[in-house]
Image (cartoon, rainbow, N blue to C red):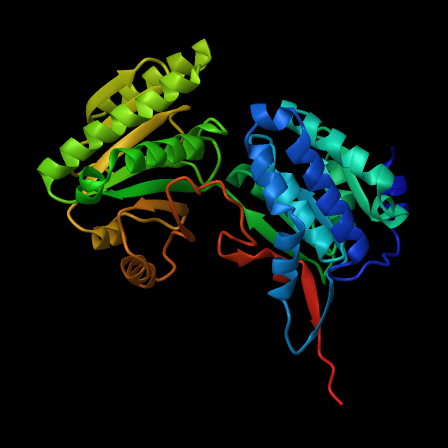
Length: 392
């Protein structure tokens, strides 16, 4: 389909913020995801279905009540990443819920989960009000087809770009209309923080649950998701941290063994090259492998924490004397901090101390991939709408 035809079919609108027709469609779509047999093979679909429950949609809309009239932004152009299959649904669904017309560009390299999602979308759309089909488009085209990206960018009221720094910079070469805005979600890195004494004092069932959650956080998207932990900071005395880390690694390894987690041969080689490379550079003082699925690297004290992806299931371990020491380590690109063993007051104090220098989310271990309306410090429903002041 020529891009002109695509855009011509999206003229007009007719939707409002929280439109009942869209809410019904999203809820029906979510139910199909939860009923799908594929949801058992792809647990991320369960999280997506939960996000689309009617009660969750209502909660999102209720949070927007205020003194102004809230209206849709207009035409929203989404460019999601290829390595996290479900991100496009969260971005698109929130925008559609806000009454926008949407164009989502999916990469031709999208994984098998996308096929399941699109099938459920198609089934739900056949029973939805016709306006859903008239206002929502999911397309695919080659990344090198810059004319299409340029045309969609010029026509949209908001452009949402998810992906690496390179993707963001490439897309920015295509100008927007003067009134249009852009939301960018570039390369990010994330980490976990565990209080060693709390881990050692925790009951076995608690440690098993935390290990299960950590594996979900890291392995669902082969540790490539921006919110998946790549570094584990152990907080406490050196002896406690050593004991807690060893026990934690044992628990994680048992979870992986029980699930039968496998690693492609090429990735297994890449992980060893990356980890031994850190040792050769003098950054790592020890490297430990538990089969091909789990690699653990202990950094020398003065070494900087690597932010690059080292391969699925590769974790860097560091010790801190106290939580406040994170202030000297955190960078602006750090997104999610999963935590265990800390109270709310401690976490809020850390957030204030960081002062926006990094870390946009602090969530318990096991919740790294739980999508929320506020992402990377951005309130998405707010950004997907405009405010109209009415004074009498």
